[in-house]
Image (cartoon, rainbow, N blue to C red; front, side, top):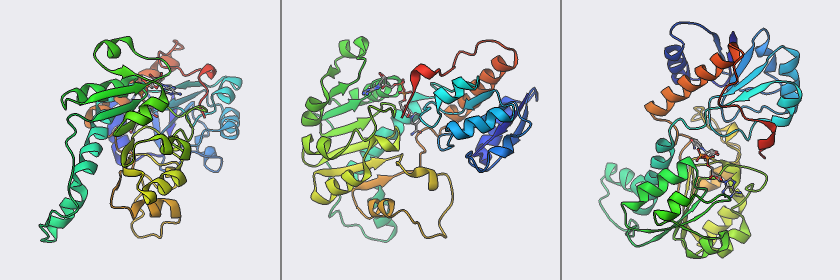
Length: 335
Ligand code: NAD
């Protein structure tokens, strides 16, 4: 089975070469992102392996199908970038890695929360410059605060578990509340109540038609003044224009982003010698109370190895005409 990997970096090649040490698959590692202009690179391959910012829309899927591709293997959990209906129509199986390490993402969200609160990003630079002043670095105790968790699936649940050690109140919203979490003291409330109660809000729900721009002007107006918002899920959960206005007015006191709605043109590349053309992104970077990481929440050794092992297992099942466990069907159409 020949598999064309799009959007690869050295760490992808290392992890997948290890997982495919017996060379049962022939992997072609490509640096290009998959889109209609690069889809021809999938010629003569049975499968493509893609990541979060590959644009696997209906046009690309039709072009993949023409080239004989019969599997799209996502090496990530989210599948909002794949047109599942189109894949189904063309008989292309979509597989993913549903849970490579919820700990990696939850721990990163927690790290962002502490860094923003205690302003580690600013303190680090100050001390290096010989500036030992504490002005502007005043934080707050997380103990006793109310944390709002939106989406209590695998990652949200681990995040709630980590928070327990802080002695804070946790309020949560999920379309499908988890009874175990509720028994453990997490209070499920509706979104409006969560916005009204939370000092810190962390997003752990998928991007769907329902959750697109969940954090908009209306939501921000319902939140406590000075709220901290963390997004380690998908960029388009947040309306960037609305959070910029919220930051300017002081309604949002802190913003931690590991994802950004237009990240496809920026993240995972070294653009340090280029002029960034995305004015909204550049504006976000000007706020002292905004911390941005470039979609690295998943990036731990455990998670990367698990991504490679599960993806190779998914490809194995396809190669053997077995039903892979991690198929994403058209009934799970995301925005
Ligand atoms: P999951 O499927 O286990 O959990 C998602 C939860 O969201 C579920 O409990 C679901 O019921 C809930 N949900 C669905 N629609 C909702 C809605 N409209 N409102 C509120 N809740 C809703 O997924 P997970 O493994 O916990 O991952 C969550 C998200 O994190 C993924 O969708 C992905 O986008 C993102 N993610 C980001 C990174 C990263 O590196 N930054 C890595 C992995 C995953």
